[in-house]
Length: 426
Image (cartoon, rainbow, N blue to C red; front, side, top):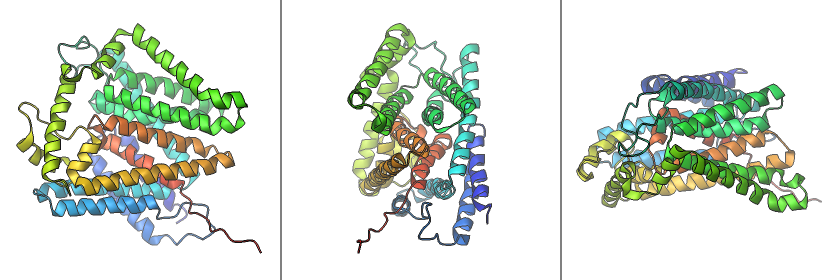
């Protein structure tokens, strides 16, 4: 049993190392193994001591994840396409038990650091191949850019993942963790590696030319700047406590504006975000969203059931001509159409509790001056950035990204400490 957590961590690391390079079926098999091992680990582990400093096995986040799964089960039972919704429920269950295993093993700071390091090294391999595609040229595997756009001939890298938007969704949280790794790692050689990761992952993320990825990047960096400024504010003179954040944000905005003025492809891609239906990609998403809203109106309480298989059976009834889609192209609409208002309320509740718990744990680590706080800031910023990207794209439900999505929840959960009872002094 002394190696139980490390065995679980090794299984989880195997998922993260292989996910970008293998097909989804193998990833699913590995996640099923993780779920079976989590069940074995949970049954065999003794109850923690009341004086333990580790997070408990069950937290409010666990309870809300379980509640969301229960709602998905009911939505499956009430689905008009039960057989296909059941397949979606099986996939959702795999992700949730994977979260449970991660939340269990990441309570160890050593395992937490090792798993993040392995994930960052994997991202470096993915990004290096993406940069090679940029310099050598990469053939588009799908119609990613409007043929009439000035960017129609621009190379969009996709590395091993086969899609630039998917690559952006994968690299977004890992770019954030590359930044916080510089502060979390103590040795200068490790810090130099973190700087290399920031440069390579950041460049590859930008060269995907994924507008959703860029939106998520802006959200992530903004939140990370806020959290870092708050973390160091107690050490700063009064002037910098007041003006540090405005100066940093002003500098960042200036750099971004200068890049937009100098780099034409970047300027064209950003301007297309505000083109409305004038951009073919925007027009496609708007038409899909309109059809999905009609689906939600017809089944508002519990939705059609989880998974893309159920969606693909119902969506053709509502789709606009020539606008077929595999999903709702928005995480919020996807949750609404799959589990209805009840599931969507639980989803928002889960996010609220997760961020509240993350903030509370961050204050505790800030008082202790623990470097673990940097990983926690990275998880919070990444989660918000992935939500920003997921609001306008469908990549969140792909295994390469969804495993990292639940890793963020598990990281925040792993820092949970129950409130200690307060005793009156005699």
